Image 1 (cartoon, rainbow, N blue to C red):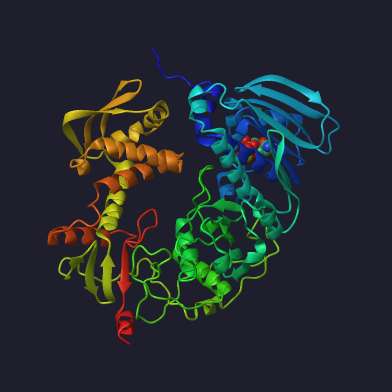
Image 2: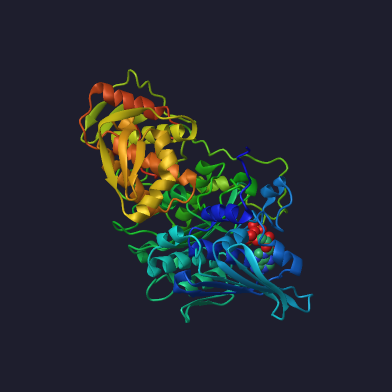
Amino acid sequence: MDIIHLLPDSVANQIAAGEVIQRPASCLKELVENSLDAGATRVQVIVRDAGRTLLQVIDDGIGMSEMDARLAFERHATSKIREAKDLFTLRTMGFRGEALASICAVAQVEMTTRRAEDETGTLLEIHGSDVVRQEVCSCPKGTNIKVSNLFFNVPVRRKFLKSDQTELRNLLTEFYHIVLVYPKVAFTFVHNDEILLELPVGTEKQRIEAVFGNPKRNVFTSNFVDINTETDLVSIRGFVIKPESATRKAEQYFFVNGRYMRHPYFLKAVQTAYSGMLANDYQPSFFIYFDIDPEAIDVNIHPTKTEIKFADEQAIFQILMASVREALGKFTLAPQIDFDTRGSIDIPLPTDKPVSHPQVSVDPNYNPFRTRGAIYPDRQQPMKGWESLYEGIKPAPQREDRIPVDTENAKMWQYGKFVFMPTEEGLLLIHPHRAHVAVLYAQFLEQLANTQGAMQQLLFPEVLTLPQDEMVLMGQLLPDLRAIGFDLEQLSPDSYSIQGVPSQLAQQSPLPVLQHILQQVRDRGADTQQEWREQIASGLAESAAIPSGKTLTDNEMRDVVTRLMALPNYRRTADGKTIVSLVTDEELSKRFA
Ligand code: ADP
Ligand code: MG
């Protein structure tokens, strides 16, 4: 008898929905992005109970024909791309044609929509992928989508939702990410009949002020200075706070080509530009908009993913830092060697070598008149001679530009929690705990992607008891945890037995390690398998690494330094912490000047 069968669409959609729609905030994001893709000039968001009972988005965009209205809820139905190559010229926010199909699989959806050219509109009601009503209706031009009782048919998901307060915060965060790049669109946000935000059309600055310029947030654009840099590689514009107006709590936003992004490495560039200007634990607020050729960034990003990969991060780091520094009117870099000082200058390893500018690859087919940005189509020609920004700033070596060291034979010694090693470029300081974390992280990630990790059986199996929501999480992580070398079996509805651990963890008790990973995944909100894997790898690496401050034998020191230097990026850990710092002869001499 044949045993393979195709899943009904409703089930397939529900599974896919898990990827795209994790919480009300992801649903809101998809709906509002659709409105913007439809050219809306006004978008109203109406929410009840933090989106649990109702999430409604009303726009005045192009609307849909009767046929399109029905098709819009099919999986992979999109009006935005036709061929795979369209992915590379993507200008709209959505493109996978998954959002509406996913939403209607896990909620009760009612939509009315009408195109300007049609006399009548379409009303469509879908409950958990089943169309329960479709009729002609009269309605204003545009689209009005009401999503009720999200996850009504997926109790696990519903249980997973956090408190209303947290979910509302998530909704607003998602909303800010969008409204900050669309100042020419009017938005309102209503929660339980209270207008939380009323954002009229304006300039970017006015939008920022409208969102954050209340006494609670205290972000007033008069406290900001403009940054503006155009290069062949990237254009960077936006606003950064004057150092004297910085506070402990900062609003930090990066956008690329009209999308919000997280970027710890570029954050470091901004912080570096402020170093020496802010009091301890003060953070700079900024709103920085990058505009770059879409081919220079990873476009086929997961819809829920906010981290974006750039082809030329080191060069952009430099340009960004220079641009912020210029805006702040300072061009001096004070050398620092303390690993833990906030804002220490550690990315560009200063060198005595002749100055070499970051390489910028120039596209021979570059057409300055092709618009590169969705939002700023009227951008000027890229500035030539942007290298002048570097005057007074020492460039960082490129990634390949490694410090030559023979780690097998070099002298090295430990002082406190650091290892010191003389090199041709100067005295290299290494943080061995972080070095080991980076080495293990790379190793665990590699194992998760490709191989089965080596397992060490436990003599005495341990029992891990978890609250219900963490059991759900555990279920998601299980295949990866097993792949990395954990031998786990579910014992009861709220516990697992641990019979084996990855061999690198043989020295540790596995319980705190697993609890740490689960907590990290929860707190940092990993949503995709790649993100889970990153969290698993980092949790394991953190646990299995040499403890900070441990006295190392010569062999241990040499081993960890050698393995560190073999990594493609040995200067910082995955979460952006400094691993190595170089003190040049010049800096040492200065200290005795
Ligand atoms: P995607 O945005 O990736 O194309 P969605 O599932 O979000 O996929 O939407 C499917 C299609 O439905 C869109 O391509 C668009 O044609 C149509 N659509 C969705 N929302 C709207 C809207 N608010 N106004 C007009 N058309 C819409
Ligand atoms: Mg969409």
